[in-house]
Image 1: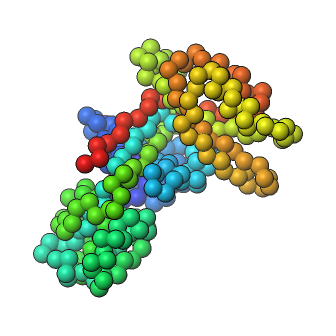
Image 2: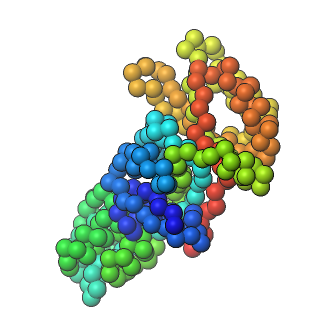
Image 3: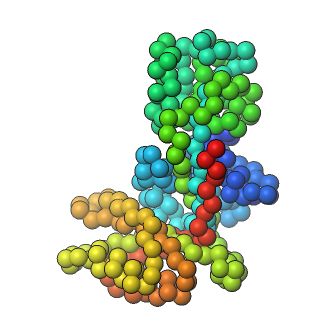
Length: 287
């Protein structure tokens, strides 16, 4: 059994991502109220995995999670790209015409707002979590309140789905990182033998004595070694004005060249930390 820490209650998209990533294995989720609590739980329990949303195709990166990942010292061991589907649900017997309010996470409400233009009497109310909204409707018996949440939440909390896939943009994917306290050298060696390491997440800073073009020099070296830069994200260094940490995702087909590239760029960086080396993740089906 895989025990996986998620942010939110059971029925959240994090649970769906965990179950699909560990497809074919039994998964027990460990709900956490916040991402900070999630990272702490995984840090304290070596047997526990964590799954963390890091970016979304509609709203971009979740900057605070990059910072938590770096500060935690946890390793990224995998990724999964989940198609986000929003469903309107309510208590059994309740019709959409009976609703006066619909509760959900602000992001979900924004992605479904056009659907509700046909229902001007329904107020959209922000909450902390999609699945939590569904849980509260069920537990409190709210007959005039609906929730926008994943299908799994309706199944868990005994709600009926009134409308499926009400999100406006169907190209809505969230990328999740799978994290663990550490991966053994034996596991890494086995993955390399099977050619299952072709992606990495790295964070670096620029030298304090700022030479012109420092960032471009680093990127040029990575390109020279045949590495593909699939993502770059900069976050400010708190307490150091105008200094930044650069989070990058690299893909490669030659692990030796990848290691050579890191060795070549280290002298050009102030600091450089490998957050994880793993296999490029699968993507869930759109429909």
